[in-house]
Length: 252
Image 1 (cartoon, one colour):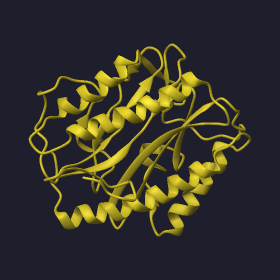
Image 2 (tube, rainbow, N blue to C red):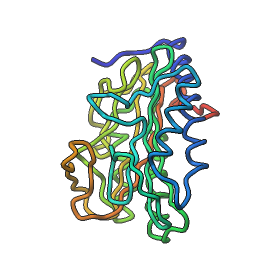
Image 3 (tube, rainbow, N blue to C red):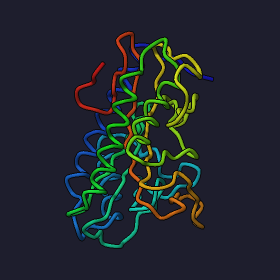
Image 4 (cartoon, one colour):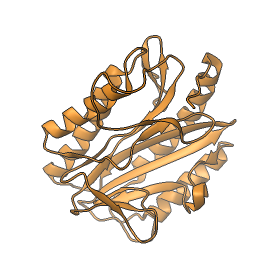
């Protein structure tokens, strides 16, 4: 069931979103050759708890970490570890928190040290896919408009759009209805309504869109070993369009 939030509830989600933005900004500033994802995970948990919030991911269906730290061909749900990051790697960090009962969810991808032009382009296009989706998020449009906007932009650059994973509704729960696929047909799917809150998160692979899950039961990787990029924000749908709750200047 899709839950419609009031203006006051969306403002509470915005507070959570601003906390998460501060956490991810701090993490991004620390990413460099030699740091470990375990160090980043501890930093994220310490910062979230210092704000009076709770990490959403840690313990979620048994997930053991505060962040999902996915490297290179890992799409999402990567486990943190003590391996120093190396120059040229692509690191995607996904993180969520809950404050005063309201969830926020956001992700970014960044190059470690100096990355190739091909990797940088993949990250750039993935973020562009998100902003293409934002352009069509408004009351009266449909879920398929979001998926089509992402898919068209990614595939125009020869990339694969991961189909086995998708965005989602969000609010008091991390994952609520509806699912928000990153592919689809314009004009299809449920109609977007004012007060809906969703997490839009393109996951774009340099090669094939096909993925598999590793033996840890969590880490998703591309089947062909190609790099994958991930970008996500929590969004409220207003009468003016998309209000991004996990950015400092909420835009509509």
